Image: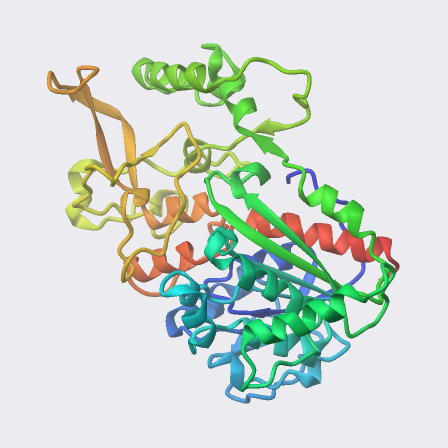
Length: 456
């Protein structure tokens, strides 16, 4: 695992909203939390959660329920999954029984049309998240979202989100604008004592992250909001310092591949000389001059090649078998020989301006949900093999193909036991909307450790 706080043996519990394909849910579970409730609106994502549950979310499993007022499951019983609108859920039965409420409210309303329209958009699920906090009163909240919320055009509304999470019981009336309500919240927050211990209040930490800095083989810039209930004496300053400290770096990666027999090439000894020199040239160009600030404990970023070959932050997985480019039209699953599924080649990959592929010896590009489930260049990978080409700047053209669903899942640090429901496009959409498991687990472990240190 990445360098994380020591896991506590205390039985902890969680509720997962906007669960999607289960990335954050798997992360929280792997950090030692027992899931008590899931919610997800998308039909295919619900099927994924149920199909993968016993192998990825605990032996108790998950079962669909239609009751909008579910009860916490007894020990040994599956966690309820409510497959409907989260705004219909009554979660009062979980009050006082939940350590962590986790989820990433959909952000589509704020990616187009401006904040004013986004705030009134029915797809805006932040109010549902705050309603859940009021009903459940969790000890902590973990919320992941796109870094675009930090753009200047969204800055005021993003601060409003944090203010609402700080004071979730200061409910906004329907006729009141978010701007007016924000002024109300700011007035209250400005008068709070530094040692506020009101159990109706939360202390919020905002962390901009690149998932690659936490051991994910992918460049993925996001925001993680973590909130602790104010009556729990968490050392916020120590927590904030810890989660803002990268565990992996690009500089360490470039250094590891600079020499022909460097650590990176020792684990990838079968790479062709041309591909190796291409990567080493990139490393030489990117590598900064050594500075006294470099921390020798920081490990190299993980690359897409690492993910495909099974090198992660935990025990090594089996390498995924090569995809035969002559059989792409067959939709053959090349993972069968090692017992994994969805390692299926796909025809039709193209490279053109604005649609650039992944490089094997760098972290993957950001996995995206795509337009109507059809990803762009981030789902294409440049291979080691190729052919002489006089029209190419270096006289060589590399073969390329679409990444398989399983390769993409590994770039998201999903376990090989994860089974995505639906056709390829739907599986890729679920992955693109998810939280990388290793990133989520880092934060869930940090939260568990902070609660333990606070005596909870």
